[in-house]
Image 1: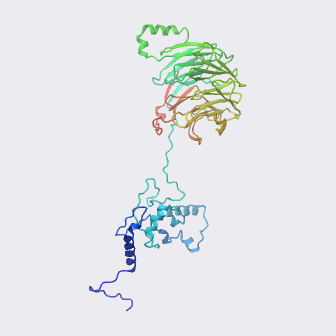
Image 2: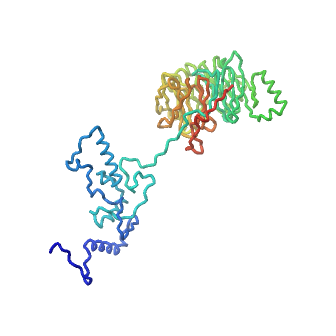
Image 3: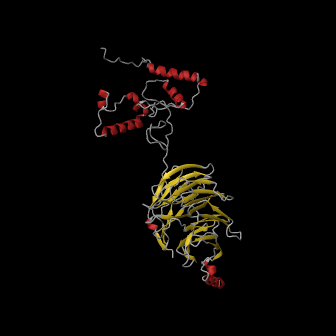
Length: 517
């Protein structure tokens, strides 16, 4: 019968199948022409012929997406959007399991892949399975089934986790009589890690290392502190007053034990009470400089040069080595000067005023070399970038609410960011390319920005009044903010310069509260 299989005998050898002859012939030809054959990548074949999933063409299975679509060729109408999401998920799953060919998505092939796959396809171009050495799978691959081929439309690169910024301050200091005045600058942090704060008619020092608070000076009932500013070395402190004077104090750090053991030192401290300038670390008043007719609300240091801005619309340049009270007078603003900042190279001075103007001066000019008039409110917030030469940031008041960036080298306006609230202060991080802004109504928030994208890294809240005062620690990791709610709050917002990925875990559990006087 035709359907019966022929019997095989032990003496008869059946001929090899045609596919085997074809396969052997290919191997013989390859061995003969091995000197002329160059493979871009080493390929090893096994005699067990285990198919490689990544190279196999599962699209030849012709698996339909759904029974309805396979029969009619038209996808059924979506029911409440669930069918669309299901088909999208099915397409993505099929692509991950069987490759882009199964989903009908074209994938670009590199010349290296094209040449390596061509050598495999010479055996049989219509085989479903492929046999080649498995390549190493990427560590960040999304699918355990895929090796080289990536899923189209999916980002396979590793995602860097955003840096976590603690949402609570790690320390709070009570600061009675801290004025709620937008045009004053009453907080500054020295390079010796000492914080100076102006409260009413007194100046207080807070040592960040020992957490001790000491009273530095008392101006009396007829005067008031309007600004404080440390020199870069942290040895000189300037104090601007409401009567237009600028007092200069010399700060010399001494061990507390040396003061306690030295009777002569104790006597000097008792004598200093009469001149209303004292400190356990011994501070000495150097001089009192005049020039302004009204209050001095802004101070900025450039080595031995001190700049002071006041309500009289003028800026005075003072060399503390000279006998004169000031060496030059800068006129240009039409209203009170409330913001002053020297660039990091000490070549340019930026000034902001209540006339909505931002001016840039150099060391030798008495007139502004650059004038920016785009702000529509008072410009108090000013910050120079420590990373890019000539990059200046400025913030406007309630009617403006914008942070603007300028290139003073090319005299160009770079970008503008509407923050939605009054910009009170700006400070740039020395460790990373980020900056902090403090704001007023309605949230009184503190925002950490990533430059140049100006994406919000964190928004910190806690103050009940507008955050008018801002200073940064010498290591560049901590900021202190002050507000009319009579509190100073310390926040860990920036990473250390050695490890920018260090995450601070300080939370509300470590919250401390201290009275600054």
